Length: 141
Image 1 (tube, helix red, strand yellow):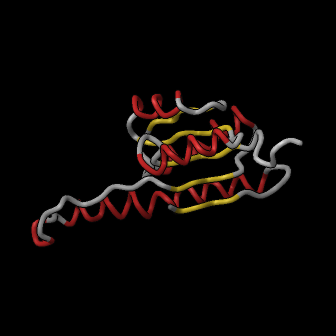
Image 2: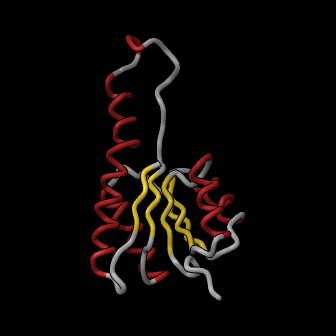
């Protein structure tokens, strides 16, 4: 009997290292075709080599709305649909006293860790609503 995950498609942000990379590999081993998203192309390519299923490497800035739309467009073009979005992209502030942290650094953390999840989820729901069969899942790690 075929697995219920066989041939499904997952987009994983923050897939170049840590939880995102591990999740991409686990999903791939479970039969998902995986779209790997992060800034660092070399690390994404390395992660993709560890995935036994078909992959699509899409390096770029997760806070960029145009980039997010392009990721979903390329995923649908290559795989025909998207079943799962795993929002995992994240950065942290430097380990310094709070009074030494510029507000623009804090805003960048919010943009990467929170706003990007909104941007990618919004794009995911556009796809989820218009594919057959309809639907999909969005996770924020």
